[in-house]
View 1 (cartoon, one colour):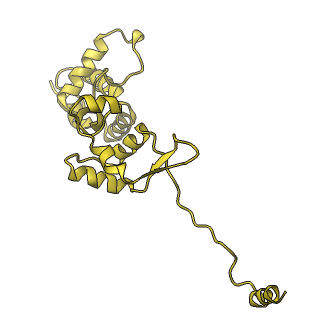
View 2: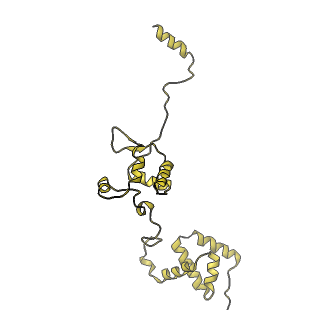
View 3: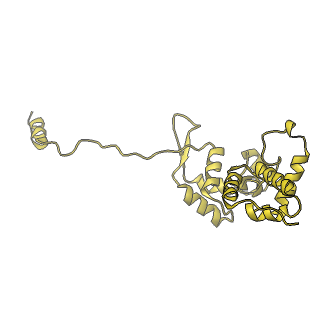
Length: 188
């Protein structure tokens, strides 16, 4: 028995709706559609939504659970890639004392050590004159290929603030009769 496919207009609407859903809701929606269509529905839905068979199977498992007690998480706890700061040993260290007791590399702080400045009035305010990209390049040279996003996290973690360089003019330019006013001052 051949399954009855949806019309092309309905398929477009279904695909748009599917793409607007979160990962968890996509799984469930695909599983419901497969259940509605019966035998052969899984291959049709996989092709229609361009999803994997595991997505549908996981959606069926989700539908078998009690959904009323569910939390707002889309993925399970611990799912997803871990941040490089947590997985790369030696890119960062927590406390100076910890660093002295272990043999962890201090790549990040070694790089910015000579390029760090701060406020003489407030010891908690410090900054570096290196750009985020140059820090990332120097970390890459030390064997830690990271993006500027990771550099931002490291700077935040070590309480570095952004410092905007600005220029201030000492005096006004193109003032008429300036030379004349200076000569009057000198003659007095």
